[in-house]
Amino acid sequence: MRVRIDPRAEQQFFRALLWLLTGVTIFILFFIIFYVLKKGLPVVSLEFLTKNPVEMGKAGGIFSTILGTVALTLLAILIASPLGIGSAIYLTEYTRENWVTRVIRFGSECLAGIPSIIFGLFGFIFFVVKLGLGWSLLSGGLTLAFMILPTIIRTSEEAIRSVPYCYREVSFSLGGTRWQTVTRVVLPSALPGIATGIMLGIGRSIGETAAVIFTAGSSLHIPTSLFSSSRTMSVHFYILAREGISMSKAYGTAAVLIVAILAINIVAYTLMNRFMRKYR
Amino acid sequence: MEKTVIRAKEFSHFFGSAPALKRINLEIFENEIFGIIGPAGSGKSTFLRALNRLNDLIPGSRTEGMLEIRGRDVNAPGISVVELRRRLGMVFAIPVPLPRSIFENVAFGARLAGEKSRGRLTELVADCLKKTALWEEVMDRLDSSALKLSGGQQQRLCLARILALKPEFIMLDEPTSGLDPISTMKIEETLRKFRSEYTIILVTNNTKQAARVADRTAFFLDGELVEVERTDKVFSAPSDKRTNDYISGKFG
Image 1 (cartoon, helix red, strand yellow):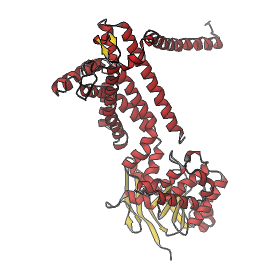
Image 2: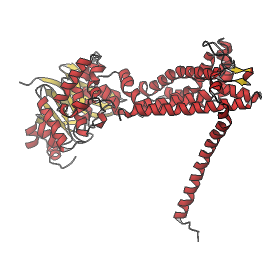
Image 3: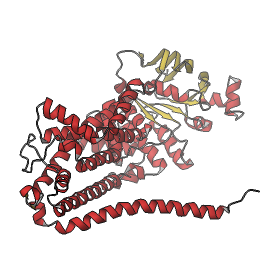
Image 4: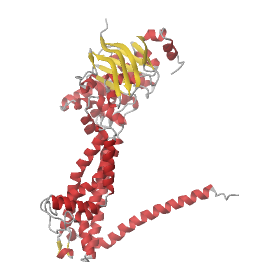
């Protein structure tokens, strides 16, 4: 005779198991954040944020690396967003599903799976050396843009696809052209999803090290043009820790990075909620 | 003497190889309410969507024969689809307000056509909302979301939205299928009032609605036009047995 398990005991067991798994995930997340902030926050001061690094970062602050991070991320997003959203619009609104769209989609998914250091290497060979852009914000921005492009295409495509078909019908039936339908009806409705993709892209760009170190270089000077070499916070952190220059400054940089990412996410979601509430 | 404004001659419509409309012949007169009844899948909606070429959006859509509006084939090469759709305002079965304000919903068509003057838009929106008897209910909240209106109000908003196009024809595809009797009554009243200004094509799966408002009624079945007659005649003495079976509720 088979042993029967009491269904209620079974239910309780799996509930506890799933709770435990979730708990471990959340614990790891909070542990990392807590650990970095505990080590790093005491170093962070107004001076740390507004002064440039001195003696390779042993002393002083991280101002130029903050500027470098912001400039590089902004550049990457400005390049990748129009490309990504444009591709997504083409794939969803201007073609029917066929082998071309499948090839494009497959290609962009493969692109998403390539390790960032390969992007770094590609960026170095192509932008830095071949096109002669040197170690610069432009090389780094282009490399990062290519790296986050698949994410933006994918999320935008999904967001556009989820806009109810009847909205398009209404727009067409009211004498809208395809372009008017896309810009006035489809994109506004898909905006939250598209913004999520862009947010993910920002998140990846800010934290990226491997793709940036080969392409934007590691200059500690304040960048003055698109062709200046610049160091991002994550690269700065990597060099400080790796070369044993200053662990406390490294943790300080990491803390600023984490707080910045949290802040960007919170601000973005708040803005999005406010925008969406208007007409829902 | 009635003036024919829409004429179908041996008109067929295919999706892929399957015919949705089979060799339809009919005429629609100016300033009448033309009712189309028939069970689901009989080709009623396909007929409306063939008129404003909304069927073009469906892959594999193809036509044969002639479908003329004021003597011009809607599928002729030189026809501007955008202009055609503006002439034939269409209301769908489910009210679909766009996720915008009431004002912007009504002004949408005019904005698509390039109207930018706030003054003219304001006048237009007020005028169209008055014609659909919605003005009193929404005049103090034109800037709030159209999605917050009730189902019946939303459908009248959709009607106001197409009036803003200044169309010649109003096509309604089962416009009251999701509405309560009172909202339905309001829509029907509005349609009767519109008769003097527009030619109205009303597709409905509610045979009583056709009997109440349509001047003439066509009965579609499996993509074929079974009969088209004065409404009182269709409902009192239909010439085809299938029509009689349908309106007396034997099938459908």
